[in-house]
Structure formats: C-alpha cells, structure tokens
Length: 99
Image 1: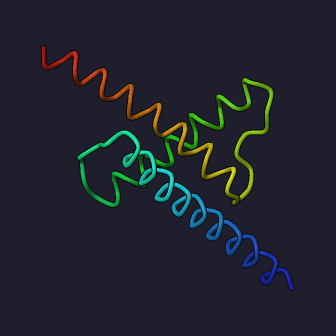
Image 2: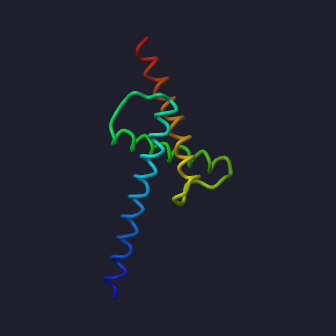
Image 3: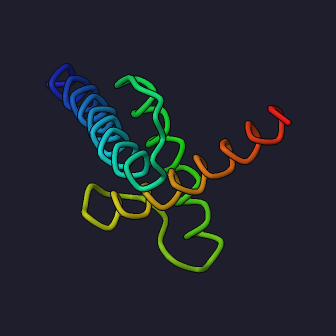
C-alpha cells in the first residue's frame, strides 16, 4: 500500500512536468509567432514558453492575480504574454549588441 502512494506521487510529478512542457511549447510557439522570432527548434520553443510562464506568473502574482497553478487556457495565455515580453527583451538586448 505504501508503494502505491509513492508511485502515485511520482506519476503526478511526471504529469506535472509534462503539463509544463506542453504549456511551454504552446506558449513559446504563440509568442514566437507574435514576435516573429526566426530562431528554430522545439527545445528553444519550450524553454521560451516555460521561462515565459515563470515571468508571466510572477507578474500576475505581483499584480494581485493568481499566478500559474493549473493547466488551462488562462495558463497558456499568461505564459504566452510572459514569453512575448521575454522575447522582446532578448531582441532589445541583441539589437544593442549589434550596434
């Protein structure tokens, strides 16, 4: 019986990780489409989306709203907004370096 509980927690942790990857991919792809980012790769898209979720969730928490706590359309939109902001900052930084 104790093993079943341990496996249940591991299963939930794995599903939580999978949900973050899916949200990250969708949010990253949406943000890259909005910003017209030409870099390619699934891993890049997931990283941009997950970091965008952290940024967007943090900003929502600071604004008094709920952060990101479940898998929903709102979560994807908050993550996409954060990813757009992240990509805009990265573009601004890389634009300054070229000059």
